[in-house]
Amino acid sequence: MDVKKNNGLVVMDNKLIRASYKLTVNEIRLILVAVSQMPKDDKPVDPKKAYYITKNDFVRLGVEPKNVARDIRSACKDLLSRIVTIKTPIGDLDTHWVHNVLHFKSEVFEKLKKEHPDAESDEEFISSLRLHNLMDSLPMIANSDDNLIARVVLHEDIIPYISQLREQFTQLMLDDVVDFGSFYSYRVYLMMMQFRSTGICTIKINDLREALDLKDKYEATKDLKVRVIDTAVDEINEKSPFNVTYEMTKTGRKFTHLVLKFKPKKKNTITAKDVFRDPDTVDMFTVDGLNDKQLGRIARNPAFIAEYNHLVSPTSPAGQSQQGWEFEMVNRLKNDPTQFNKRPIRDYLEY
Image (cartoon, rainbow, N blue to C red; front, side, top):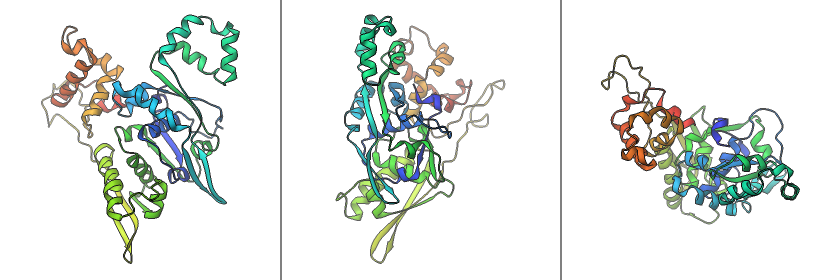
């Protein structure tokens, strides 16, 4: 189930945004994909519900297609043991992110389908699935190709902080964090989004260190600034829809607070005033700060391919391989965007 079916919206309680934890970049990607699939209304969430992660989900978040299976496998490997500490009215709650993780072996899909063509009548197979609460995986296996990678069940202690929209919550679109390569970028960006309406986020330095689970790392302010804050801010400025600046404020001689100030980037639109256009062509192309990786993702989008495959010959390099197609389309998007007018180009990032 690709995250596009739920528009990639992620909702988290702010207590979880400020909770103390450390994840790898791939682990936080996996968590965000699972969270984006949860219902965002007031209906209760089944704590046993499984969420399925596909290769397409990770490609959408900027992972190179050739590395995606490896990166999801890496995310699954240690996620079960990761601890998150959430502050409650009576103390700190230590819990896990997930109840269980199943990493599918894609090479067994075809074998399963051949061995169990009528799986519902295979008692041994069904009994094995029931033993591990995997019955919901049967239709996924029956209808899947090797795009399906992982199945996760979130821990019941985490679900209230994700599924219920309380007085304070944070929303973001997965497309906002495409291509983030630093865990610190994800965390700082989530904290910023708590204050999207004001554009100013103030965090105590001690709270920041605790939230990022730094312990005794980067104890010197200059190291914290270079290794953590600058890393996050530079990547957010480059890859997110926001521009951010920051300052560190002092009480006496000690730096005590990090103040982040941010605002949406200005959108640049190519119109008939900027490039030569056929007067009968509707002006719909929006640049909007897309980088090469995002343009590559657009070029790989099935809808984009279906709408523009007439632009290349089947015998040309672009018609012979995915790499050739992507290379050709990215160059065309950058050099002559007027060819791509069937819809706003950014729409292809939503698929």
